[in-house]
Length: 235
Image (cartoon, rainbow, N blue to C red; front, side, top):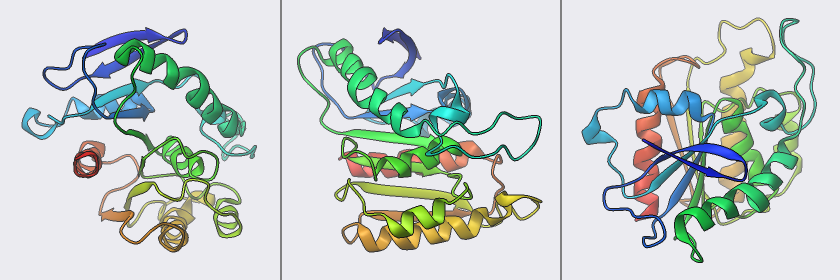
């Protein structure tokens, strides 16, 4: 694992064998919630995480604001309210962070393709990005927080901006079943989101992978499926 410094941020970098900044070009997957995802990555056997693309980890600064599409009340008094700065954060990724990474890694070039990968709230942001920008060729959402206030109504009423992306959704069938708040709708909200997307994306551009685990359980297994999907799409 390496680190790079760009746009005032320290980012984690996992590069394929033989990659040399400035002289090589390969696809890039931007990994949100990088602190969680890269910890899970360390638990995946080496033979299952060797892929011919870059993983650029972007740790959150304020995930309750950066990863949420609009303001909403906190689900518990010990947490701050959701800030709803997701559109602003996507704009920052597109106009500041990603160009900075491109300059650092590819000089005057650019990657062959670009993906966005997130888990939980950042998985929600990934799907939200489809309605706000077409910069990402692929979007991967692991246990996306589609229970979020008014989310289902939003996807049903809005049209995708990014109509050519390929999308991967991964979720536990029983996610939220023991919750006593809005999260109890997690699995159904994921199904609703999938049904909307399958009707808005080209045929074959979305894959849904269910698993028997809870929201925070066996993230390495879920991540393995997501990375295998990206490997297939990047070829």
